Length: 107
Figure (cartoon, rainbow, N blue to C red):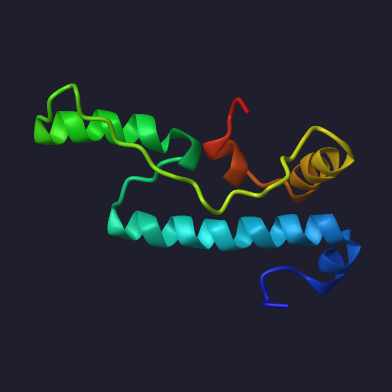
Protein backbone atom coordinates (compact mmCIF):
# COMPACT_ATOMS: atom_id res chain seq x y z
CA UNK A 1 0.00 0.00 0.00
CA UNK A 2 1.06 3.63 0.16
CA UNK A 3 1.96 3.83 3.86
CA UNK A 4 -1.11 5.80 4.87
CA UNK A 5 -3.10 2.92 6.30
CA UNK A 6 -1.90 -0.14 8.16
CA UNK A 7 -1.86 -3.50 6.40
CA UNK A 8 -4.01 -4.87 9.19
CA UNK A 9 -6.72 -2.28 8.67
CA UNK A 10 -6.48 -2.52 4.85
CA UNK A 11 -6.83 -6.31 4.96
CA UNK A 12 -9.92 -5.97 7.16
CA UNK A 13 -11.73 -4.03 4.41
CA UNK A 14 -14.03 -5.64 1.86
CA UNK A 15 -13.50 -4.87 -1.83
CA UNK A 16 -16.15 -2.15 -1.69
CA UNK A 17 -14.51 -0.66 1.41
CA UNK A 18 -11.10 -0.66 -0.29
CA UNK A 19 -12.52 1.12 -3.35
CA UNK A 20 -14.34 3.60 -1.10
CA UNK A 21 -11.20 4.27 0.96
CA UNK A 22 -9.12 4.83 -2.17
CA UNK A 23 -11.76 7.11 -3.70
CA UNK A 24 -11.73 9.20 -0.50
CA UNK A 25 -7.92 9.23 -0.39
CA UNK A 26 -7.55 10.43 -3.99
CA UNK A 27 -10.32 13.02 -3.80
CA UNK A 28 -9.08 14.39 -0.47
CA UNK A 29 -5.63 14.85 -2.03
CA UNK A 30 -7.15 16.63 -5.02
CA UNK A 31 -9.21 18.82 -2.69
CA UNK A 32 -6.09 19.82 -0.69
CA UNK A 33 -4.18 20.70 -3.86
CA UNK A 34 -7.09 22.76 -5.22
CA UNK A 35 -7.36 24.61 -1.91
CA UNK A 36 -3.73 25.67 -2.31
CA UNK A 37 -4.69 27.30 -5.59
CA UNK A 38 -7.66 29.03 -3.97
CA UNK A 39 -10.09 27.87 -6.59
CA UNK A 40 -13.82 27.51 -6.16
CA UNK A 41 -15.05 23.94 -6.29
CA UNK A 42 -18.47 23.25 -7.72
CA UNK A 43 -20.48 20.05 -7.53
CA UNK A 44 -21.01 18.79 -11.07
CA UNK A 45 -24.71 18.48 -10.26
CA UNK A 46 -24.81 22.26 -9.61
CA UNK A 47 -22.54 23.40 -12.44
CA UNK A 48 -25.19 25.03 -14.63
CA UNK A 49 -26.84 26.99 -11.81
CA UNK A 50 -23.55 28.16 -10.29
CA UNK A 51 -22.02 29.13 -13.63
CA UNK A 52 -25.12 31.07 -14.69
CA UNK A 53 -25.12 32.97 -11.39
CA UNK A 54 -21.35 33.64 -11.41
CA UNK A 55 -21.14 34.68 -15.06
CA UNK A 56 -24.05 37.09 -14.72
CA UNK A 57 -22.69 38.60 -11.48
CA UNK A 58 -19.00 38.80 -12.40
CA UNK A 59 -19.34 39.90 -16.01
CA UNK A 60 -22.65 41.77 -15.97
CA UNK A 61 -24.11 39.51 -18.65
CA UNK A 62 -27.73 40.12 -19.57
CA UNK A 63 -30.38 37.79 -18.16
CA UNK A 64 -30.92 36.12 -21.56
CA UNK A 65 -27.53 34.43 -21.28
CA UNK A 66 -27.75 30.76 -20.29
CA UNK A 67 -24.73 28.56 -19.64
CA UNK A 68 -25.29 24.85 -20.16
CA UNK A 69 -23.01 21.87 -20.35
CA UNK A 70 -23.32 18.43 -21.85
CA UNK A 71 -22.36 15.57 -19.57
CA UNK A 72 -20.91 12.93 -21.86
CA UNK A 73 -19.16 10.66 -19.38
CA UNK A 74 -22.21 9.64 -17.35
CA UNK A 75 -22.74 5.97 -16.71
CA UNK A 76 -25.40 4.35 -18.85
CA UNK A 77 -26.84 2.68 -15.75
CA UNK A 78 -28.03 4.68 -12.79
CA UNK A 79 -26.92 3.96 -9.24
CA UNK A 80 -30.09 3.10 -7.39
CA UNK A 81 -30.71 2.48 -3.73
CA UNK A 82 -29.98 -1.20 -3.63
CA UNK A 83 -27.43 -3.57 -2.17
CA UNK A 84 -24.47 -1.75 -3.79
CA UNK A 85 -25.70 1.59 -2.51
CA UNK A 86 -26.00 0.17 1.00
CA UNK A 87 -22.52 -1.38 0.78
CA UNK A 88 -20.98 1.98 -0.14
CA UNK A 89 -22.97 3.75 2.60
CA UNK A 90 -21.73 1.20 5.15
CA UNK A 91 -18.15 1.51 3.86
CA UNK A 92 -18.27 5.29 4.33
CA UNK A 93 -19.42 4.78 7.92
CA UNK A 94 -16.73 2.18 8.62
CA UNK A 95 -13.96 4.31 7.14
CA UNK A 96 -15.28 7.31 9.11
CA UNK A 97 -14.60 9.78 6.34
CA UNK A 98 -16.08 13.23 6.37
CA UNK A 99 -14.99 13.96 2.80
CA UNK A 100 -18.31 13.04 1.20
CA UNK A 101 -20.30 14.86 3.91
CA UNK A 102 -18.63 18.16 2.95
CA UNK A 103 -20.10 17.83 -0.53
CA UNK A 104 -23.22 15.73 -0.08
CA UNK A 105 -24.66 16.75 3.30
CA UNK A 106 -28.30 16.19 2.38
CA UNK A 107 -28.03 13.70 -0.46
